[in-house]
Length: 141
Image (cartoon, rainbow, N blue to C red):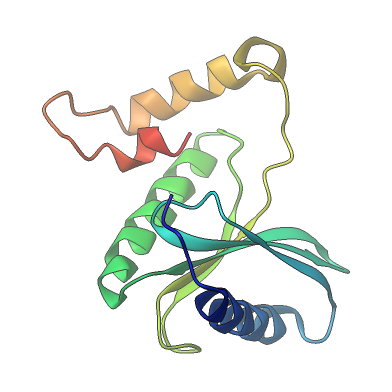
């Protein structure tokens, strides 16, 4: 995990607030920086509408990755795989690409949560490429 400075965290928190305000208005109840993100600034957000995740990229080049992830998520949802819905991907509200998505509230092991069947469905629509070193879809699950 990268070590972020307090100034970087403060700046990205302000950006995340802007994304949430744009999407939900003034319903923000809580925003918390999650330092576990390896390539993005990640924020756990609570609003009156529910719990969400805001991811803010470290560079403008990440927009295409966010768009690919949104595409894969839509494909997974279309065949019944319960993945968190991506509500918005963009770069026009703030100076960096961002993603707003529902927070995954599933817990438990693969067996008890039904995730094994979910992964089987996802495998059918987006099989991992054994020659690729960038299987981002499968690394994210």
